[in-house]
Length: 632
Image 1 (cartoon, rainbow, N blue to C red):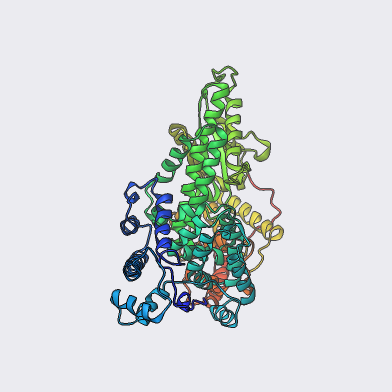
Image 2: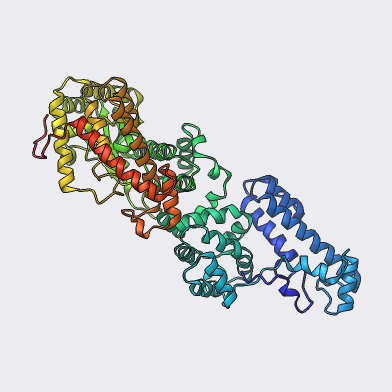
């Protein structure tokens, strides 16, 4: 904006070495990147500026176009610098201020005229944003509703009114990136809101040179940041509070498609980080930092359409599993330090969407802990504990590791209400008690929850025993009409006590996700359970427990709802309101819902919900009135 190419040459004088956008700027840019990245990459430790830029490009740290532009500019400046010194026969870097000297310099540099030389020199210079009519008009054309506020803010930055822009170098970098930054923010879908979030981000930086240098070196980073600022306020808030996340965003691994992540890669990466820590608190903070970076990576790829909802759900579940697995080991180590090695084995079971690998951004985790040990077994430490006491302490430490707030924030909200006897029962359950409870005492709703169990951490042999007990309970012959009646009553009660809030309440609205989940879980009782809803529907169709057309309808609806939920959980704090949503978000949702535009999507959703509710009523009978006491 307000570029005014060549403005520094209006007086005919420019310092090619120290002037804005000159030799020193290019050298400092290359050296800054070497300081930031050279500690890990020895190939970047080269002296010549041109070689350094080439190494940065080869390492994927600077885009090819940026390297070419900088190298061409650097060579031009050096050529002109040498000709200036030949002309003046002295150590100077300033162009002549008289027409005769300018003409001779142009000829020595290989240009036909001073104007021909001044144009490429001037095109490399960026000036600060001015609060003038042209600037305001340009901002309006870019889509900003309040261009005066934008212009005032940027002018304030150039006057060093925030910590990040108090150095001259920071202000020069800001000038250089400002046109690209404002264009990226304008393209984000909600320019004014995105710019306000960028203001918060920039104001929170203790110093701006490093971050602004990253923006200059990595134009992709500006685009990614603008997408987050414009469409994902929760992710934007995380970046504003923790700017160090930008370091992760420039790593080559960050842009690798999540669908290409190797099995176990997240767990291995987290294990390495935890191994470098000392103590419980340091370990859980390392997990929070790792989780924050990975969640941002998954969220950004989902936001930009580079990851499918299925990929995102699996990646979120894999991330949660890595955190639970490694922090369970940390919890065991912490309890062992005080009470000796465990006197038995344990397994952490995932339920709900965690069990089904259907997590989204911000999902909580439904878990339970099962242990097994010889009767009377105790730990052998200085302060021995019975097996019951020991694994209760392990579970409490695990819950703390996952959900306690630290200086690195929260990791997950953990829900253990689905364990035997709910909040009245122990947080860790012996295998025999676990099997007995579900075989003899569980309510229908607890059986439905059990269809979504899978082991995520702990002893593999015990996990197999626990899952065998689960399979036996689920497959046990029961009166189908009793299970369906109880399920219908529970769903009717939900409709009364937690009614859907409209079309975009994809979970609770009649014909939404909850209806589909009730069908998948209720019809699985007496058969083989599958934790994932899509897999359960396919299995029910295959064995004839759900008719083909209804199974296909529910499966397709579940896929669309899940696709939309992945985007909404990133972009919206509460219930989605189309009247207030930016057009780009509506377009993103239309694409996720496989519709040509947002109006078509809404019409299709309404029709789908009507059809899903009808299929739910056919499958579960709809005969319940919400008054059942629930069968055992």
